[in-house]
Image 1: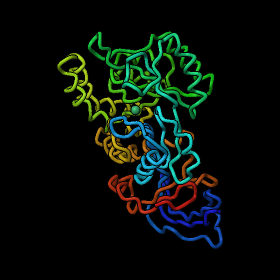
Image 2 (image 1 turned 90 degrees about the vertical axis):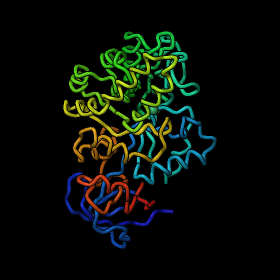
Image 3 (image 1 turned 180 degrees about the vertical axis):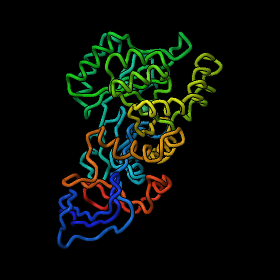
Image 4 (image 1 turned 180 degrees about the horizontal axis):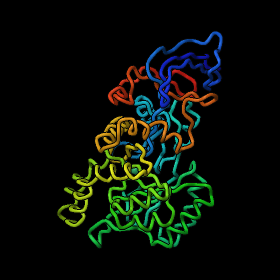
Length: 361
Ligand SMILES: [Zn+2]
């Protein structure tokens, strides 16, 4: 069954020009398609939102999805929030069969998290010694959709505080191996100490990045390395600190300091020209479907509203190799009543959602 041809008109973002669009065979065209059904008139047409750090397969608290119904439910919550593509930043659950569900957001996978033994959330990562990292990075690079996810730092219980997981020379070899396989690499980091080794090794993106210093931000900007701050998840830091306070007071104080600086770090990265993208970390300590909260948090941290919107839409799409609203592009777009560039609240109320050329909301 082929989807009906569609017609929409409105202000197309980010250009901001009023246009007529048609959708035929799942793709956008500016050529009128006779007989197309008009599904939206007026409003603002935004390239589908992106959650650049998401874990389909994990529910609240990191619970593994039990079946495809639960995977679908998580992905549908994202879609209803306007997320039409997500970068899965590591999942222990095989979600590949969702690729056949054409009503669900596109998923760009990073394979499994790779962590040092007992240095991450239990039952989530593949845990392996540094000597095995390069080989496993190659495996995950081939399994994923162009990304590999490392856990860069975590609490070291012997040390009582955050600490790097991998020696610098291992990181250099692992990231070079991923690049040879055609994959980009990203790493979870909360603290500062893991960052110089990751950045020097040529990492492509930093997740959370709360430990970034002014000097490191300058280095990211120089290299074009991206940051996905996951500010809605950073809101959990005081809770992590409280939970660790008794056994790990140094860790608790580190987490409180990182939390206190988190907005300033994001602002400094943006001001320095570091590419900043919106990701929620949904499926960790975060519910699915909160991308709009993250876009608002980036704005609250100091990104102009339009830059915060770009971080969750067209700029993130371009970074992930997904087109915007353009001739011949797959029709993945969301319509809002008011201009989300100046009114981020508009994002809470999608008027129309078109995914792969089909009206899904
Ligand atoms: Zn995550």
